[in-house]
Length: 215
Ligand code: AMP
Image (cartoon, rainbow, N blue to C red; front, side):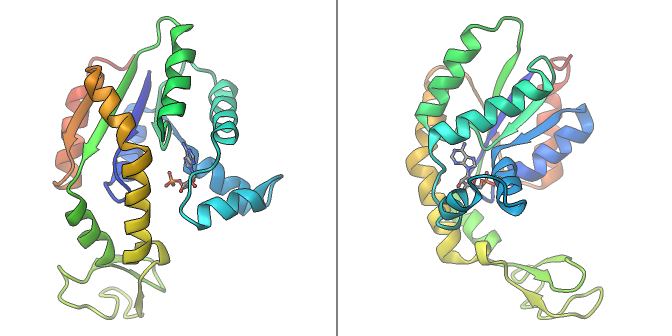
């Protein structure tokens, strides 16, 4: 099965992907991870890729398509995958649809975690991380907490959790990726889940959807 998962940045699709991976023994294929791996290990072309990522821009289609299909073919397309971060625009969707036309017997699902943009922005910009133990807090829920409840160290805000950055990523998603969501919806290929709930409640819905469908 190829399970494509979609959602605005901060919708919790990474968390749900990890849960699905564990519960159903899927391979988690994240194009963001593929890109970060090249950048962090300074592999060929890393500087160019870093330029796009650091500016919140999408990497050109030819580069990402090659990386994605190489990774899929390496492990074999007949396995169960949760695919996170691809396709990100209509060109990429068209390519996937064209490639899948030539393959039979592979179940494909498109799952969209629908969230309210304002709620995401509030949640992400309120997130603080302990600089010592990495524990995560929310300054709204924890009433302006300044220090870690567990080890007492100072809390900090991640650069990509700042308002300007999250807003830019959401805007980029709305321009480039929402057309993908709309196309899948028009073609009745999209399964939508209410993402403005507790992580476990969202996951329960996903379990119900996947049960009986995963080989
Ligand atoms: P992510 O972790 O999925 O948000 O991806 C991090 C960054 O990698 C994105 O901001 C893009 O620069 C790049 N990236 C990941 N997936 C794609 C894709 N399908 N198309 C183009 N760029 C991508």
